[in-house]
Length: 192
Image (cartoon, rainbow, N blue to C red):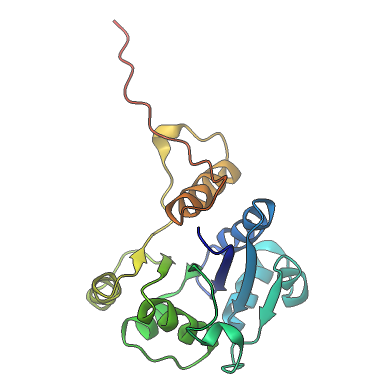
């Protein structure tokens, strides 16, 4: 990543742990993080991780309220190399796909697309309906990356923590963050 600034969005889909681990790993790699958490994202973080807004925001370098559309991350002049929404709800996906920019989180995503910067949406829903699929196609056509946090079972993860960490590392490697160490597939080793 050229500029060591990353915008992180956390929405109300299940999987708040992805956003939390992304913030922690980015900090460990020296990447400055700018966090926007939706109200539903706070609810998910509380339910899944036992964290309130204050505890979640303590994991980021800078935090902004979703209604603060005048924040620095709402402008293309703010030098952030990328944004990851982890997890990304279908509501947020739809807003990004249709350019709604109705709050700071979706405005920051729109900025990434208009400035041709990396936008990664870790969408969390299953099964997908046609609206979900069309919205993912629209975001992809605009240059965004749809990255459902699917575990790489071929790496033989020993725990849920390991699966989450592997996924987060893959996202950071995709963003070309210096020091990201996504485990690579080494090929099949067939015993004879």
